[in-house]
Amino acid sequence: MPTTRAARAAAALLASSSPAAAAAAASAPALAATALLALAGPAAAAVVELTWSIGWVDNINPDGLAPRRVIGVNGKWPIDPIVATLGDTLVIHATNKLDVDTALHAHGLYQNGTTYYDGAAGITECGIAPGSTFTYNIPIQQTGTYWLHGHRYGQYVDGLRTPLILRPQNQTRLKFDDEIVLSLSDWYHQEHKPLNDFFLSIFNPTGKEPIPDSGLINHSANTVVKVQPNKTYLVRVVTMSALAMFNFYIEGHDLTVVEVDGEDVEPFPAASVPIAAAQRYAFLFTAKNTTDFNYRIHADMDMSMFDSPPASLNPFVNATLQYSPTAPMFAAPADQAPDPTAFDQTQLVPVTPIAPYSNDQSVRYDTVFQLFDDGANHGAFNETIFRFGDVPPVLTAMTMGNLATDPRAYSPFNQVVVTEHLKGIEIILNNMDAGKHPFHLHGHKFQVVAMGSGVYDPVAGAANITALKNPVRRDTIVVPTRGYAVLRFYADNPGVWFFHCHIEWHLEAGLASLFVEAPLEMQRKIKVPNSINEQCLLLGKKVSGNAMGYNDTTTFPGLSMSRVYPTGFGAKGIVALIGCIISALVGLGTVVWYARADTTPGKPASR
Image (cartoon, rainbow, N blue to C red; front, side, top):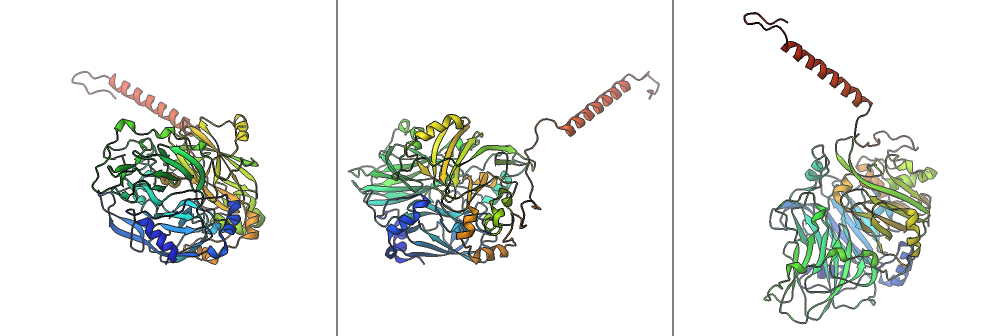
């Protein structure tokens, strides 16, 4: 059960009819986590303890269109939001009642010193075996707006997701009267597995993603948020979608951005903000001074994210900002909806200034979607599909000694980057695809030091980066269609960190890579709990060695490089084509010869 403080806070957040008073988010880089905890003070720390039984819940119908089963907690869905305070420890006793393994990822948390609790199945753990219990002990080293979700088999698409709010000990930066938490999500009437099975099949060669059936705000199509005149509210918005991107605004109200992905920023006015899967924002707004009207809260879906959406999909996802239960709805002119493309996230200024990190090590990822030799359309970095091995990389890093510094130990067939400790790392993302992609880095907030269209030119871009004083920091970035983004982070958090597209279908398609940060430092400072190994053994996985359990960088039975399906004609194709042409000519000649044979009436045709 949660502590009394956390229980009261979570209960308050659940009551959308009376949003709880709370604090705004503040955050710091992972290097500053120790300093933040010192400021919190040892007497303030608490254990926020939760006991979760994860299993299916039947007959859930949040959009009122089709009931289905979902993955919930303790027989209930939606899952209660989680609230903790800087310096606390979040303890989750998770019992898996599903028939497959599961895992829980606290999205955006540094997990400094506890990479093994990051919850990415196949990366930092093997997963929680069916019928077993695993305990996460997560240190709260930052503040802000986050979420906790399943990180196995797309289980968050089936409902395993909830907001995670991390508060400072003392709120002094922002002034507001009350707090509202809003989750934005897309909703599918089918379960994830059959949708994903078709998505990654030979019957879907173009790679068309499953399109949601509806959109939800706070897990409902009919959410009501009550407000009082003249009060100022802090609104935390968490996007928990599988694919959809939302344009967020409130009719008739001015929004001021004060936080992005848990990072405090200087107040920045915004009429409408596009928010992609896994991104979060916090806003301030002041209520009207009358109760004459109620207003719509908009989370309108960006239809450019969908390939041929059906006419039945309603892109206008709304909740009600209610001043009075008897007031009419404000009639906003349809042609005056704010333009979300006017919002420029690179103009956001972090409250804690940090100049661009040095470029000590740079990696370039070209994002493509192509047909591969298994007949399916996959997402890939540099034409490489990410595949999981038998040993989670965190255990490879801890058990391979000096070989842990060799990227091949984690699979020579994946995109793997091994970094040194306390170095600046640059990621160049060139999106060659016709769609937008939200990329998320575990264990860090990165600086967004460049964005644009086309392919990034590092020579021309270097001077622009040097001129930056305090670039925006976040943990999930949308790379534009046929454009680029350049990210930098500081390798101050030894661990194994997943980097992937947070469109869930694209992660399942292999659009991911791995950063192994300071593996020798990991071996010196980190001790992996026995419970990690125990779960691996329950699942029939190995707990040491390279990706397939061998103590070298060359032996990987069962793993191989996926190849892009060939275009044009190779040698075998040319030979086959020539053979077909010869056969066709012989056949045509036979037909002509037969037609010209002697066919005098009364006389059998000559052969």
